[in-house]
Image (tube, rainbow, N blue to C red):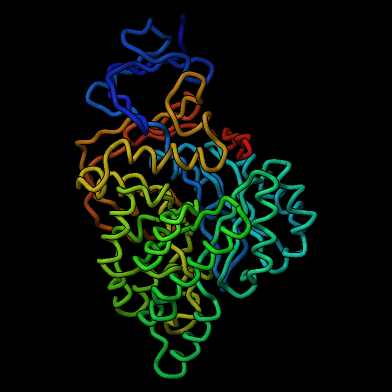
Length: 464
């Protein structure tokens, strides 16, 4: 048996086990795993390194329409470059309906952009807002038959917030077509009422943003999403859970046999609401939705990663620039919590933060890290077994990880097109040193390779 590439002497880690071994790669796929595999055209000595499945980030925003006057900085080229440099080899961004276009036309537009510029592989979710809710019966089923098997609905945001009946219709549709409904769980009516009261009573400083969506708002919406999932029987995933109160509702559901999935994000694990007390515009760098919470909430999120309440950790990468005509500071002459678009960049730092603050801090195991960042998301969204695992026949998406390396997160050294990082100056322990996408090395200790447009769409399988 011959190989194009063989990664030798590393510690191979899956969601279930770890072992010393070699990985033989041929034609972009893993051909064999074992000890003392035959020589390859190229051998890489991974002694002292971990060999992990490439990360699968199933919640990131790229090239979407402007929100609150702000534009996302990343296109598919810069976003996928950043992903690869951070150890992620597959992304799942969103089809967000474009002005004047149907859902189908929007999906084709996004697919064309990714085909031209993506450096790593990808698949898409569909966002269903108020302007496209009329397509639940026709446009959405047709797209799901073509492989767009996950649909995101919102309980918050003007123009996006759907009522319960429409959400139930979406869930019924995703159930029939073997898909997943993703729910942004914040009660928008409460958010709007609280925002109005805060704006009337006091200066609308950015620190007030957290008070527009307190944990009770997320708790209610999470419970309602669980109820709708129970009624419809749909596979349902609660996205970017931030509050301990919401976690309590998810555990309540699991205790009653309601199979609801859940994700959280690094910002809720390593940053707290106190960041919004920063002076002036600096607080805008930490404004996301749901808002950051307290240290006690973060502790509960970590516990929930360890005990299986959460199935995955995604970045929710929303790279609004800080400066410039379409950045966060363009919202007006003074900071105002209503006008600053919520969202943080984090595609490149997701794995490093979770490894450093999770594995190295003893909060989760190495196998749990792999499950949360690669294997589980690939399985949930129908990308497995091509993605998310190290096994013969899978794509050779592999990250070599130096668990002993230390570094400092500095945006000047990152590769996205944003102009700041909310993790600036944070010390990290453990870094990706080489990233392979279908056997091609895209990141090698600070050197980047791989052409824009080499990424490919990943065919998805329906849930049983």
